[in-house]
Amino acid sequence: MSSPLRFHISHFVLLILAIFSLSHPVRATDEKAQLLQDLNKYRSSLSLSALKENSNADCFADQIAKQYKSQPCSNTTGADTVPGTETQFSNYPDLLANCNLNTTNTRDGTVMPACVPNLDPSLVLTNYTETQYNGYLNDSKYTGAGINSEGNWMVVVLTTDTAGGSFAPETSLAPKIGVTCTSLTLLLGFFLVLVSWKPI
Image 1 (spheres, rainbow, N blue to C red):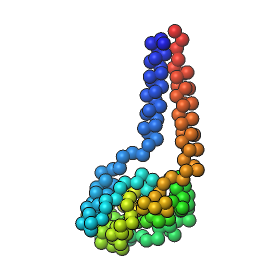
Image 2 (image 1 turned 90 degrees about the vertical axis):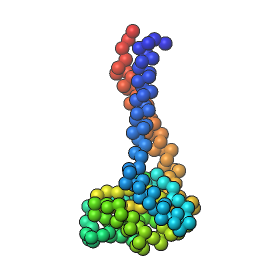
Image 3 (image 1 turned 60 degrees about the vertical axis):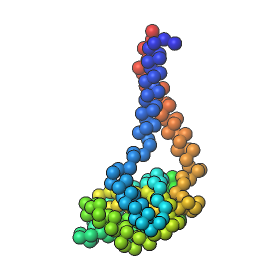
Image 4 (image 1 turned 30 degrees about the horizontal axis):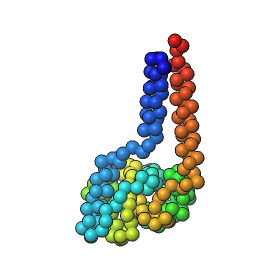
């Protein structure tokens, strides 16, 4: 194999790897990681198992946080909690679908949005451990969590080990999405190789 061809192939492989790395979710921010750690300390004090990070619930928490982002906090000295999130949005099924989820695999989970001015870490934690939300955090059936924030809104989504609360992706959609992304990535890579190809 000629040296220029080897050079183009190696660049093609690097391009594919870069595109796939960009398509995966970014690691949890320090803010999210800190809240999960604090919630797990709280649960540990109750002799409950730690909540494991659930990337699908992270995605859904992000979808919910974006819906609340433009809504102001009505309680400027502390925090607001909003129970019954699924009844707040007419596009709730669409928000689930954006994360490749549906009501079948999320019905046993719990969505806990809260508005905290400037997302002050101590107020955020207090909002979850000293409000009606602590009933959910005290429940051993919850084993995982997704966390995301937008503006002054923090959203924690609790998941279970049951099929109805696992937040596992809908299998009928996952392969189609994966095949489409892979196909587009390969086509782009081949196009770039052809464009940069120089005959020897």
